[in-house]
Length: 615
Image 1 (tube, rainbow, N blue to C red):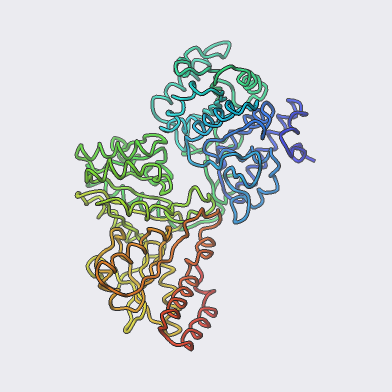
Image 2: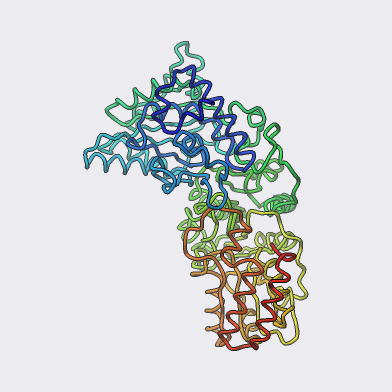
């Protein structure tokens, strides 16, 4: 039996010797490499957290003491040490272990935290509550140097010394978020590491930054030396004020393919070969790949285009642009609010900024989009990667709020490409727009094959037209593929449909109402929330145009959608071909359109054709 098999709760760690802990650390790394490479997940960050997590659970007594992991993708080791080893067999799968802390999984998980820079604010409020209530409970916030670049973290640091309680801030400094950490704080931490390396005692002398804020400072500490970590954490626990424990770790530590990966130390992997870190198979280009290639091409003839990233040049497709045009690329760190308002400044200066960000992270900067960009009618293009259902990363990462949220912004136009060709075309239209802000959104997946239009009417692409069509299907972006397949199923049973792609989905093109007047039913299909989404806007536009055709809006519920594979989740919420077809039939039945025989014929056709048309 391995040592890892004997550790079911943190108390089990305290009976092990330091020699045994070194063996355990090796077993944990081997387990993580095998489990994550088999299922996909966050590899590099967790390989760097092994010894630090062991030390945390030996010094602090979770769950009585509270340990909050900022950007919770670094909590896999924590899950292993709190009795969830078996769950890794279904890591990030539907109904399986979450890739982030999850309250339903364990009392050791307090915060379901997967957006960066929040842990210090949680911890400041929590220690204040404990100070008022009187329990002797330690509060520990584990935050990376990358997450510490976020504005919310700085706001919390400013208030931390004034809190009546005490927080142990464990600064996990590996010099990176995805890529190397940028900015003045990163330079300061590098100086502390260098001074510690040159001091015979290994103690830094220039930690005035944290002390000026009223915090104690310990470090830098070797984040892979358990005895040294334990000594520092015990000292921090006994401090009479909040203290920063500066731990220097190496992302991907102990796994050669991760250590050799200069891009992001195998930050996130899909199913890969554990020996090489390379994908087990080949796949086609993703939406991000197409965007990345097209933006580089645009940059070649548009010298005013500037790319802006919030610490995610690689994941959002800006790495190629940065390599080609480094003087026109800005990485602001994990600071989405600052990214948007600094882009407004670039636009004031005559540039056309392209801000590439995950759709879910744009939620953090809504005020900046609304009042710093749109109010001034500035030509800023926002490119939202991971829009809609993202899959295994779960509720905090689904980009399902953007269409409803951005629909409230005056003067902002949103494009949703359906394939690679329309992505290229709509990106060029976006950066050519000078009257106000634009948005381009696409999912995290392999890009669909091109779906050519049969005609374009006043900016609306008609993808399918049939004489006497009863139903107008309005497909939003990547939902065009399953919508067209649903139309095939319906046509096989005698229900003809027109399928259109509005291309620019917010605000609604008036031509949609013109087309709707020619049909008995309009069905919109989007992978955002239904409340306030494109379907709602289409219904309002028909009302405004005095068009009486009823509208059925298909989309996601206003709820937190769990983790799982994107195709499975879309099917679960009725957004695959079968689900769309079933909804159309149900609505036609309610309207009294079509005969019962037709409905039965279509349903039989659906059953017979579902397998070859799946996806």
